[in-house]
Amino acid sequence: MNLLHETIKNIENLDKEMIDKARVRVDNLIKPPKSLGRLEDIAVQLAGVTGDLYPKVDNKAIIVMAADHGVYEEGITCNPQEVTFAQTMFFAKGLTGVCAIGNVSGAEIVPVDIGIKGDLPADAGVIIKKIKHGTDNIAEGPAMTREEAIRAIEVGIEIANEQIGKGVNLLGTGEMGIGNTTPSTAILSVLGNIDPIEITGIGAGIGKGGIEHKAAIIRKAIEINEPNKADGIDIIAKIGGLEIAGMAGVMLGAAANRIPVVVDGYISTIAALIAVLIEPKSKKYFITSHASREPGGQKASELLGIKPIIYMDLCLGEGSGAALAFPIIEAACSMMKNMATFEDVGMKI
Image (cartoon, rainbow, N blue to C red; front, side):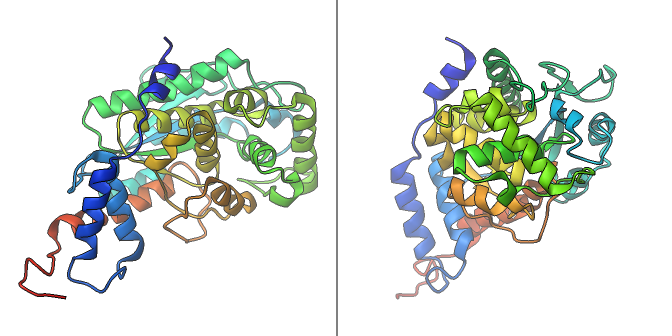
């Protein structure tokens, strides 16, 4: 049995008994009912995920998947493709946005080359799991083979398993890849049956042809490749990205290990949609961090059906929103463990 199938088999529903216990405790803490809003929901969810009334999220890591895209050739962005290579090196040096934000909660940033165009130095501090040197151009044919898509998903599972084996108990997803809003929007267009022009944004920088050209390329890619919207692997193989597949794998791996995973912004949410399509139960393990400023961000969140917890007009990617959400999730755990109940203080309500 391959790793993907084994992982899917191991994803179970949350612990219903512990969810009920957690809800009773939350409702009896010394506060008005529901007054801590989403913190209460997160605490209850974490209890169900972990099977522990007092869950711990004190060992955090964000896995940043990096890859390039053949559709770059269509002029969909003004940024040099070499930025993917350079920025991935900067993750390892602790110099990027997600690194700075992750420092606040002591999160480790784990960069992974799953498909960068070019070869990083072996001593760069980046995990090398390259499937290929970027996807093929989706405006001309499939991004990758089905076998490559499965391998990319399994890379994510492998890295998640490795981090969890080291004691990580809260994972986040991040990505780096010039041009990756194009396949992300293509996937959203297919899953949501939405015309690309309605959800196409500038990404990290729009090409000379503008939004209209980018949307046209996305529409062309969908028409040429005809992805099966009921098959997450087919979608990834036809119009996806290696880093999107890798993040979906991280999410599936986390769920199989009963570890909560924090979904970053637009592109991570697209990966979450793929993960849920592959195994619907995985969704119960997700916490969505922020509402992306990308035009497709809100649509993607609505389609996933999990409301983000942060609204700050972020659109950097990298896992930056996940890093920002970590202290909020830690606060939910602290509320659960350290806040008194009415019974504890001798009060009756």
